[in-house]
Image (cartoon, rainbow over the protein chains, first blue to last red):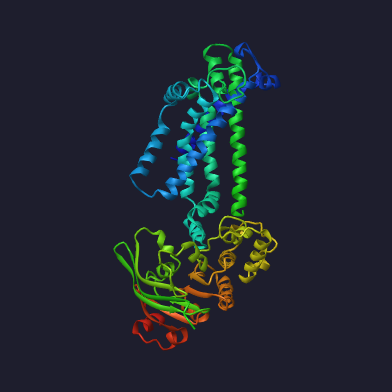
Length: 269
Length: 251
């Protein structure tokens, strides 16, 4: 029995290494200073991907700027104010449904609502808002769980000193829940950074780096998709994929380290 | 001398269950009062009624009056924040905040609007000294309180309570999670604090009640069976049930 579980564990790690390894082996050779910081030539057949890296950060930033306050705010409401009633159940159910809707459907909605109806056009804003819709349930759910797992004794201690409910939430509960909330934001961000279908119809396909939020953009996954499906350049597609994977790894490792340091300081370990 | 707290005909219910039955007790100023009795007899519910911590429980209902300095604490005009500033509480399990030692004590000052850094520093030092913790932590005030020992954490919680200058300190079995040495330190501290504060302490430890308190009330099944001077209650109990309990026949 143990061998079977050991085997499946090893197999999972093996798959991860295989996928990442394959991409890195094929992608790393094309990565150099000019590839990362250069402008694309011939729609990406040669040259660099700098505008697309900027696009990725820009669109993700807009998505998180919208999704984080909404998600964390909703989580505070659910965990601290709502109690158990029909509305709460509806919100929870709704966010679970939202989290399981295929991303292409979000893309279609984003196109119909943000691009056409609100007339934001193909832009960083339309793409960012569409991604925010996708990231929000993840952030809400993770933040809610981490707020709920803050020991009740902390809030009792705070209330017993005469703190109001809001003082208790903002000064005791939220700081204690920060590591979990950040984990949720990172999960949401990972979803936004790697998403292709949802931005396919919303963000455009610009070759230049976006400046205003109304400019069209082309985040890395979309560029990768274009390079591969239109047969522009497979080596550059692998290079783009490698950059994307490395970016996600760096972000995850750095935030984990920061969260770890915060937790250690807070818990005195 | 007027009483600090006067409780008249207090009944407490959680939903259908009648937890406290017709409680009448007066608590003297600047003195320690122990509440003893077996588990589940309503001692904790009683002290949590005195700082309105039960308000957070949706099914909580009460009738009767609780007067602090002659004023009804359940009067609709009473600000709960103000009440809890006057009636501090130390919990069974030490519950410092996951913040620095300094911030734990400064927290209460901040929420009550003290912003002056010098005043806060001075008050933190005073409170930690009053809680007999200063010498052990003065060099590591920026360290997390979660790294302290259980006994130190409990004294920190007492310091945190003292910092907002309460009149009454409620202690809900403050030593039950502590080792004997830490317990002795807390008891010494209670002796020191009783000159300035009215202290009500719930304890399962009858020796502790005789060591720290002037008055004692014996709770059983939600009623006060007997209350009075600690020495008299333990030496010459009037009620048979009190005698049975203190001689260890039940509970």
